[in-house]
Structures are given as C-alpha cells and as structure tokens.
Image (cartoon, rainbow, N blue to C red; front, side):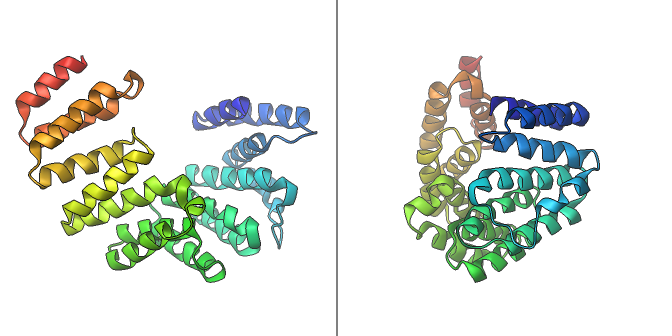
Length: 277
C-alpha cells in the first residue's frame, strides 16, 4: 500500500511514464493475492498518458465486483481522478455515470464513493444528478444523501439540502459514521448562510468531536462564537486549539489567528502568534 501511495505521488508530479512502469512491475509481483491500490494508480498513469482507452474495457455492461471489489473501485477512481486532472471532465462524468448505472446491490452502495471525485472539483450539478439517480435505486443511501445535500447547498437550494443532510444523519450510525464530520460541516455552512449561528455552533462542535484537527470545522466554530457575541469564548477556544494541536498541523491554528484579526482582536492575535513562534 505504501508503494502504491508513492506511485500516486509520481502521478501528481506529472511523472506518468515512471508511475506506469512501476505500476506494471507491482502488478506482476502481486499476481497472487491482489494489490488493489496498485491497479488504481496504474489506471491514473495510463489515463494521464492519454491511454485511458487501454482500460475502458474494464467497465462492462454490468459491473460485478465480487472478490475484485476493492481493485475495481480503485481502478475506476484512478481513471476519474486522472481524467479530471487532464482537463477531460466530460469523460470523467461518463465513466462515473456508466459505472454507477451498471452496478447493483451492495456493490452499488460502495461504488457511490466515486461521486467524491466530482464533489472535490465543485461539479455540483453532476453530483446532484448522479446521486439522485442512485437514490432512485437505493432510497436512503447515506453517502448519496450527504453528497447531494452538500451539492444542493452550494447551488443555493438550501431547504432541500437540509432535508438531505438531516436524512443522512438519521440513517443507522454504521452507514454514515465514516463521513459524519462532513455532514455536520455541510449543515454548519448552510446555517451560517442563514444566520442561525446557534445551529452552526452545534454542528461545527459535533464535527470537531469526530475530527478534532479539521480546519473547516475550526473556522465555522470560531465564526459562530464571534457572531454570537462570545468573543472571549472564541479566543479561549482558539488558544486551547493552538496549544493542544501538534506542530505538524500548525497551519490550521495559524489560520485561526486571522479570525481574531477579522474580529479586531489584534492584541490577542499578536500574543498568540508570538507564543506559537
């Protein structure tokens, strides 16, 4: 798995030929037992070299993952990631649509994570359309409810977004726990726009309980505290955050100092900045 991650780094640095060569070597060595991530990175390299047609045949009329579930999902994610990176969003959307449309049952439930590739590139309409198509077949699918709700929020359809996001949290915990922090952040963002800062604080706090070092949640919480007039509470929380956060992610608390400046708490920002240095 570590070797596969290194191949991913080669791809992000445009070293596609080197990644392809190493991916082929890894796949040859992993003939027995499988190495899912290696196949996904090989797909990235092939697509980035303009050779994505070499692996188009892997998406059949019906995608039945079976024992190759992880390998196939890694492969498809690799292709979609690479096509977006190459500036070919239309082909990326076609692959996501075809894969989701051809997958059934439990495999479809897992394949929905392909939608994150469109989500991270702000293709909100694509996310809404594809997630809606899946939800017609799998009503109440938690991941699609979250990702469609987040996209609807970005598109300004806030009431429908809130309905989706709360429905995602109403699913069994095992269905949404792995991305519950993202659901809470999406809710906090919408309530921030609506000026409901109590709800912003509620959901940002819930997100931080799940992911204590998440910058987005930190910002939402501090902005809510300041908006509610709890300036001292905001400052106290920022100080605790800076003092308790490991140095390796110091940029996140450093960003919070900007929020102190936005609130014209310059002396507090200067004092805390000095302590951080």
